[in-house]
Length: 87
Image (cartoon, rainbow, N blue to C red; front, side, top):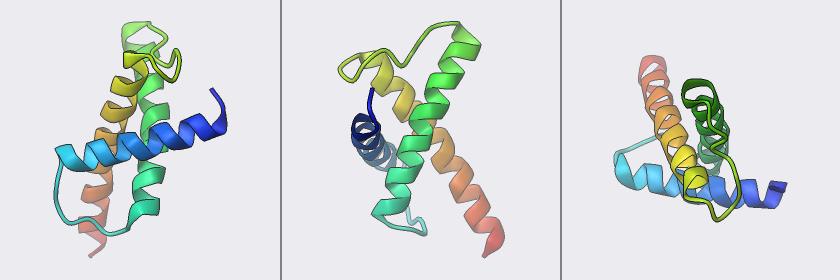
């Protein structure tokens, strides 16, 4: 997948993660996109390490989207924890 696909998946996965975990977070849409992109990479890596599957197959594969959303949720939780500590 190209960089444009990663940005699009990151945007959508970040929005989905934000909808699943509503709340007040510091940062705006750019932070959501970055968390989504990093979450997609994290989810793909975790899928490969833990389950031994290639979870980042293609743009329209459900495993890609599940990995991206789960990774985004993990990073959103970590982001919220660190943002509370620094306040």
